[in-house]
Figure 1 (tube, rainbow, N blue to C red):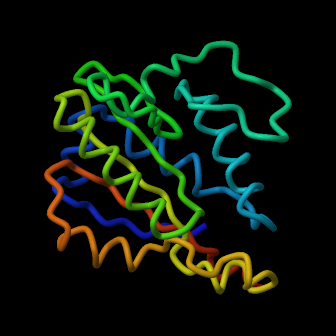
Figure 2 (figure 1 turned 90 degrees about the vertical axis):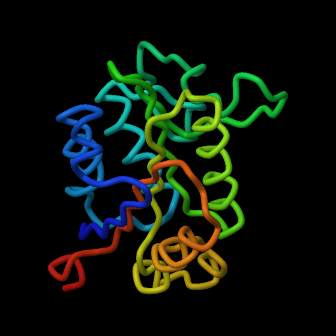
Amino acid sequence: MTIDNYFYNCSQEYINRIDSNLHNEVIAAIQDMPKQKTQSDINRYIFNKLTNQGWSYDSILPGIENKPLTNNRSLCLTSSTLKADWHSDYAKAYGKGLVQLEVQFGKVESMFKDFCGFQIAYAERRLLLGIEIVMSQPHQYFAHRKASVSGMAYFDIAKETLPIIGLECPIWLIGIRESKDMQR
């Protein structure tokens, strides 16, 4: 996979200060992923990679056979003060605080909900970093099923919109697309 990065209110140095392995850990979870046929296949692949690295998760995905032995779902909770029952897909506590991660292959509106969740957790002084993983070129990656990606969140719309909506929280936006050798 080819990875696009956009650091909103943060930098790779900031991420490395949270934990020196954080950047490489997240990239490793997606970088070697082979071409997948569906969004669900990508989600399962990332689930297995992240949970094997100790990330907690909100819920088990359909088709997951080896359920991780430990999970602290409360880390995924968006707010500890509001009565909203929102959870991020994944979360991990580091020595300096909490990182939450969303894998968004749904509609653009769902991506903005993820951003709101990051902002709420950040405003409560719980979140150090929100990570959003989206497709960079969904129509190209899923050329065989274009109808299923209509309105899907994608890297450029997130990158262009984040500075306009003016969130305070640090967000690492990651776009994934197939590498040139995958297209052969």
